Image (cartoon, one colour):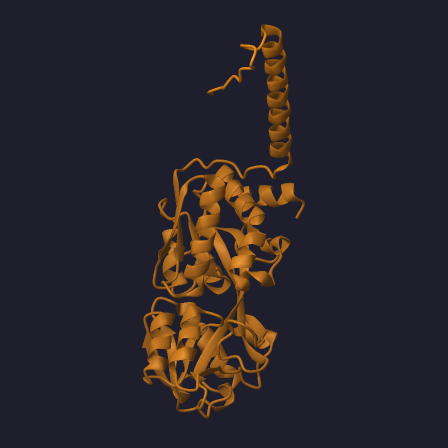
Length: 345
């Protein structure tokens, strides 16, 4: 450090004065250092370093809600844990879960429906994925079926004969949800013209281009908002049929339920309170993820939750305590449970 010594008209300052000045400077430095230590002590503790130098979060394609939220999680984990974190898009949650058995993809955003079926080895999974572990419930999802705003279809009671996106390739769970939605109107796949799409972005594109009458996408996605802006007159969310209730949905698709979609910013196509299909979104990991890493990831997620909610309104439906759900079908990672216990959840 360069120190400039001021000279008086009478020559250099006496040594005694310089000594006193230096002593006062040391005193200031000591008080400053003490203040810094006190401030550091008052900050929340770090989530801790990871044993690995990078993390990958498997998500659905760019433009979907899962991909957007996955990017937010990546930034939060990278800032808190000091490692490189990136979302990696795949076609559907069904394709993400088997990747959790590979060490280069330790995390994935998946639906509760997919997670339950994967864990038990139900179709489309050829065998049980017993290495799946839950880190957190992060988002209650609402499954949206959209029509053009000027269409005659108002609910699943009256979609007979419509061209409906029935299958998202690689997402057997979505087909099950569509079967259940049709059943709420007393219909089956034989009563519609089923259409397949690669993923929800392609599904919405088909609606924009007029190739289908009913498209599927989660409510509140960028894809739905783009469709609302692209289609003359906008789009409208289709309601479930008259038979719909929680028991009806859960009996047909374990992990599913009903939900009420409310009009609001970002909820393209929701003109009035609308009864739709609902389920949970999980941040899942694999058993190969070490307990310490799962603990650090969970701590980083909880501590960054309020900031994430500011950036992603969809996350505001859950408090940090709601990340721990008591009735999940798949087991929590032991490292995540350790974090929740320390936090008093």
